[in-house]
Image 1 (cartoon, rainbow, N blue to C red):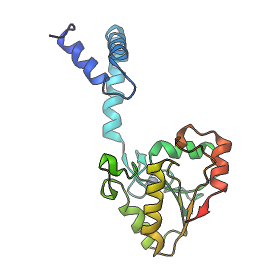
Image 2: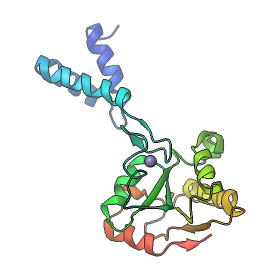
Image 3: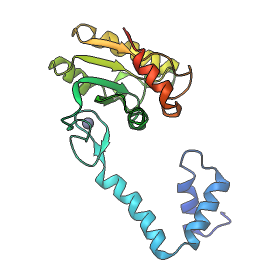
Length: 199
Ligand SMILES: [Zn+2]
């Protein structure tokens, strides 16, 4: 039997599902929420509910958005003929921090990982292929992370898109191997973008 009342145990169990949250942290958060005002607790619950109801994926690039197409795909000042392929929506925010890229994006929502049973069918690739086949794109920048999975994904996409004749480039590894784009500083990211190569 749990040492906490049922509603408390339930909240702790849900919080434990968050990344990086163990039993101790989950208990701390749960007691914090219990002690918070009704209003603050309701604001947290509403924010969680709204993120699921108001946000969806952009039909063009798969970025998380509340408007479709997203702000990047509908921007008249961005070069929509260049598409930067990233693993996760959070990678877009990292690339935007550098202020030196003004093309479009494509979010895969993951990488190929045979060990974890993740194949091409689990990634969002179809609408990228469609954009390229409709000749709406001049260059595809493969900006997956310089990890084993990220490299494998870039190689797979390069092979898949090669016959279309689109220019395929890979960002340079100004970013340390085995790390994540999200944690790279602006200068490193800028070098990586400038040093991208043909695939
Ligand atoms: Zn979009």
